[in-house]
Image 1 (tube, helix red, strand yellow):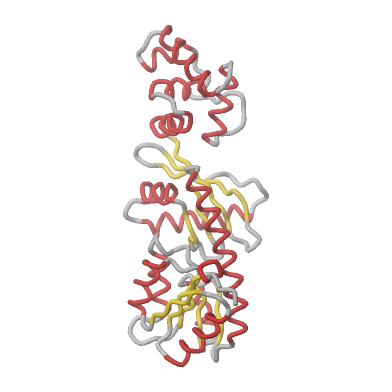
Image 2: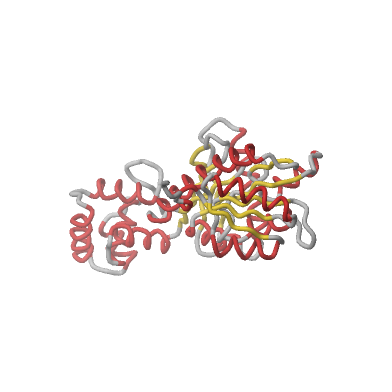
Length: 313
């Protein structure tokens, strides 16, 4: 008999305080090839989710102590677990409870009494999608992209890359809820207008964060791309992206804005001859031969508008 690779099938965390429900779900999931983790209360559910990073969480809505709605809110509030899809199990079918489940961060729900076949079908769908999204996040993380996946209906952040999280914390400060509300309001307005929507700009002390709508998934989720615009931040991006020295990156940055060698010498406080030397070095590193080509390569990396030359005072 061939052994089942349960890590390939998926890892499911089942949270329920009723032993009979746990036994029923454990047997069905185990037979289907899933690795099954169990928690009988909200506190242990949060700990197991944090440590084990399951593919899906099957969560009872009504439990003594911390109920499922609060567990979901805490899971979605933590960067370590916000990406894990939650399927609520509930006997509460009234509209207000269904709305409460989705407001708490639920991706889906099933009603009690539990029908194992229905649960397996829903879990399989969410495991596959979670793994695809995980692969996408890994690629975006590897390339240093600041991306956020947001649900337009309620503004729930489904996942975000580390760079996006850093930018949101930097420009939202202690009032992250206010920034989230502003992003949601902008997104709804953007979706109501013909494309392409104008980016949202958040002004900070050292620069500005620009948020653009990249597109919609088949499930109606929105992918937002963030980037920071400031002389210092953009110069650092160029230096890291092309392995330039700080001075070479500064020269390339001002090439984007069409500055002459004399202008750059005045701005950077160095001689025109030194500017030429830096240009030669960065042309070689970028694999280009002209200022226009260098500017085009740099602008693509910075996600600036595609035009031959930017204007800056």
